[in-house]
Image (cartoon, rainbow, N blue to C red; front, side, top):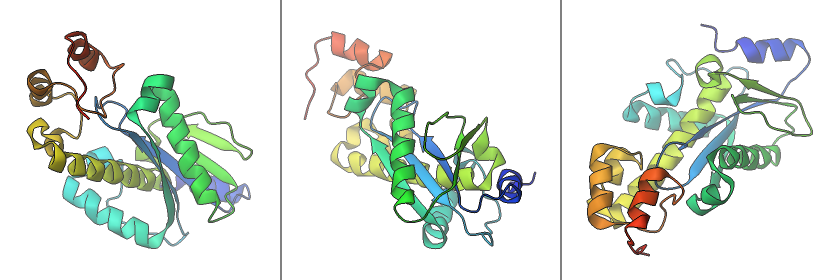
Length: 208
C-alpha cells in the first residue's frame, strides 16, 4: 500500500502543507484522550510506520523519537472531567483541533487529513476511514498520540501501582476491573463510563 497516496493527490491539487491528526484513548476508563498532529517533510521515510495499534511498544517509542525529531508536530489533551462533560467523541474532536491549532502556530497548514473525524476548520479537511493505516501522516500522528498517552499512564502507575496502569494503560482489562472493584475510584476516572459508574454507585469515595 502506498501510504503517500492521499498526500500525493493533495500535492497535485496544489496543497503544499498537509497536516494529519489522530487520537489515542477513546476506550480507556481512566485518563485523558490525546490527539497528535503532524506535518511531514516530503522526503520523510520511516520503514514500517503504520497505525500505532499495530506496532509493538518498543517500536512505537523508537518511531516517536524519530518523528518528533524530524517533523513539525503537537499534541492536544482533553481530561477525563471534560470527557464526562462533552462525551468522548466530542472530546476526541476537541483534542484534534487543539493539536492542529498548535501545529498551525508553527507552520502555515493548508489542508488537514484526519482518522475518520469530521472537523470544521477555516481550511479544507478530509476524514479518512482507517486513515491511520492508509496515510503516513495520520500514522505518524497516531504514534505521537499513543506514546504521549502511554507515558502519562506510566507516570500515574508510579503513584498508584496497585491499579496496574503500566500494563493496561487505563483500558478495561479483567485485572483493571478487579483492581477498580478492590481499591475504588481515584481522581482521573471517566465517571460516565459504565464500569466506573457501577463502582461509583457502590458509594466509593473518589480518592484524590
